[in-house]
Image 1: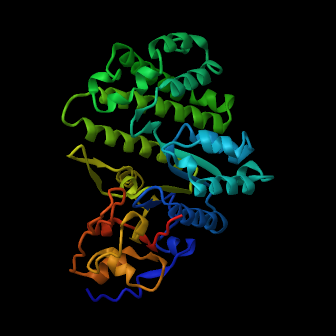
Image 2: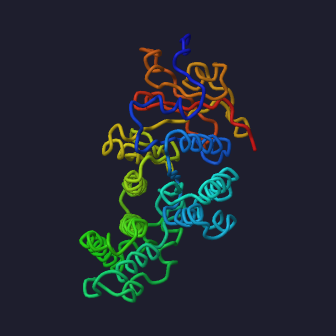
Image 3: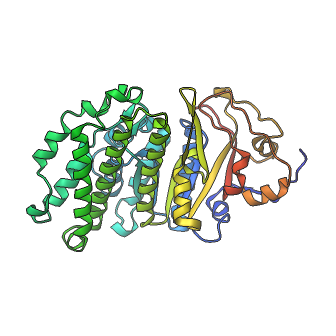
Length: 400
């Protein structure tokens, strides 16, 4: 496949990434095709530092528990806790063990030291309180929202007491049983208590919205922002638990779709701060439907990126990351008729690819879809090229 790509690639830096857009996006989403490679997180860190220094970015958000992320944000903005504590408690999915994530948090705290609040960097997780083995109890989100309102509004307006919420919630182990992910009968999500909690969560969020003029005066912007996060998370978790108890064939497709819906809702809220760098797997950030196989069954759902693109238009930008080799994972040199193979033949080790020019250079030539020998790596889908604002290409991912 002889194609001239000279005009499609540029040296990788924030300036080259920003040239892919007509205007600065409110949400700049940088995807990765695999998790667990610190080299990709180091690249993310480097780009974020440049975006802070050159483009005025102040927030980074990653594919991690939104409630745990508050622990990290408290540390980077005000020094609450220690770095070790934050890395242990502030991340989900094992991300706290990453040396690159630790360096990001350390750098953000050092950057913020002595700066006024308006200039401080912010951290957020935008995933729901979800793990592969199941979902968290809605206790933290519900009780935090109830406590926020109880301290600021007429007690008679509250639909129920904290004690009543606690009686419906019961033991957290009822909600977090990992067996519920494969056996709907083990989930409490469609119990009478869970149904009443869904109604109460809706009433609490409605009260939060109805009291907005008063709460703006009675709270700091950060307190009100967190209360809204608690409300979104409580409703999202209870919805997720409800459908965990569903035994229909659409169960898993619905659950993965609900996860991305929670992600999209959190990112829409963060976009109000703007601009924000978003980092997650390509499958969550792409503009098309996502697909995977689970338990031998095919699943399809609208990604968070697709939902955000429909809502924000050009204010949402997606830059995919494509890889050449990950030799320690058994991913060798890509075939020359794939997108990765075309880019791997170029002299640059890392570059930004102009997706539109690449698509134009390919013309009617359809690259093959690369086949991955390792289940943890999702090769770039050439059919998605027209929906990318750009591609970051990394020629070789070293083992650390």
